[in-house]
Image (cartoon, rainbow, N blue to C red; front, side, top):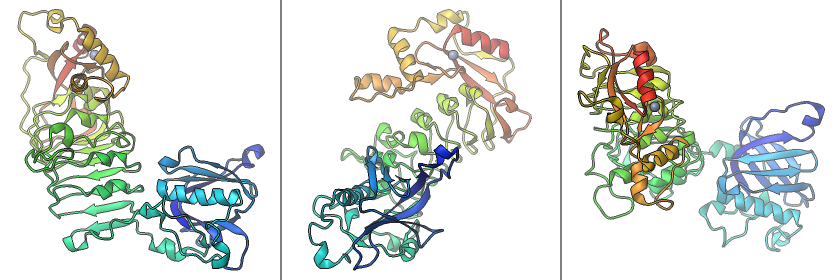
Length: 459
Ligand SMILES: [Zn+2]
C-alpha cells in the first residue's frame, strides 16, 4: 500500500559527526511491499517528485521502532536500523497512516501480512482501500512497490469548480487536495467533506451565498488562506444553522469556525464584499493572520482587539463607513493599511477628546473593577479560552466582550474612552487614504489611570 505525506529523512549518525542534514519535509509517497511477485523481502519505498525511482529500505527485520504518539495528527516516525535513518512522516491522513503502520508493525513482529493469504497470492495484491474508512473491516495489504511516477503524476493537488456539473457530488473530493476553489456556484452552505481534507492549504469560496461555515473547518491542520469575498456573511437571514433547524445561524454559530487549528495556521483571510456591518471580536483570535481584507462592507468600527493580532501586517478596509480605528492598533506596526473611500473622519479641534461626562474625574469614570472583571482580565490576557463545558455560558459570553486598551490589555466595564487623532506613520509604514490632509481618528480604550497618563503624555 502507499500513502501520500510529507517525509523528512533524518540521519542519526550526522550529529555524532558534527553535521546537520537537510531538515526539510518533502511531499512524498511512502510505499510498502515487495520488489516483485517472487521476492521474499519486504521493502519501504520512499518517492518524491524529484526522485521518482525512489529510495528502497529493507523493512523485514530492519525497522527498529515506530513512534506513533501523534498518529492522530498524521505524524509518526519510522526508525530504521540500516541505514540509520529516521523517516519522519507528517501531514498524512491519520486513517491511512494507521493502516500503513499497522502493516509495518505486523512485518516487524513477523506476522503474516495479509492474514495468511500472502503466499497463495504471491505478493501481487490489490491495493487496500483504507482511505474509505473501512479500517475495522479490512486488513491492509501488500502490493508490489513499483516506481510511483504514475501515482505521483495522478495526485490531484488542486481543483477549481466554477460549474455545477464539475462538482464531485458522487466521487467526493480527492484527499490529496491542497488547493480548492469553488467559485460562483451560489452555495449557501459548505460541504462538510471539505473540512476533512487533511492537506488543504488554500480554500477559495469567492462568489457564493455563504453566511456561515461549519465549525469543523477549524479542524483543518494546514489551512493558510481562506478567501470568502462576495458572500453573505453580513446577512443573518440566509444561512442554515449547523446545530438546529433554524433558518438563520446565530452570530455565535456563524463565526464558530474561527478557532481551533486556524488560530496558528491561517495567515490570509478575505471577507470583502460581504455586507458586514460589524466584524466579530472573535476574529482577533487568529493570531497568525498576516493579511486581513475587509473592503467593500458597511463597517463603522473595527474590533477593539485588532492590535492584539501581533502578526498582522496588511489591513485593507477601503469602501466602508469607518468613523475611527481601534486604539489598540498603536500596539502593532502594520506595513500597509488601506483606508480609502471611507467617509471623512471628524476633525478634532481639541485632541484628545475625553468620552466621559463633563466634570467627572477620570478615576470616578473608571470606577473600581469588580472581582469578576479582574478575573476576566487575567483569563483573557494569559490567552485562556474556556468554553461552556468549563465555565457557565454567561461567563463565556462575558469574556467574549472584552475591549482592548492601548496597552493591549483587556478591559470590560471599568474603562475610559477617548478619541485621539494619530499621525498616519504611527499606524503603518504605508497608509492609503482619500483625504491626505486629514489625520485618522482612533477610539482608545484605557484600562487604568496609568494608561490614561501615558496616553496624555504621548499626545
Ligand atoms: Zn491599559
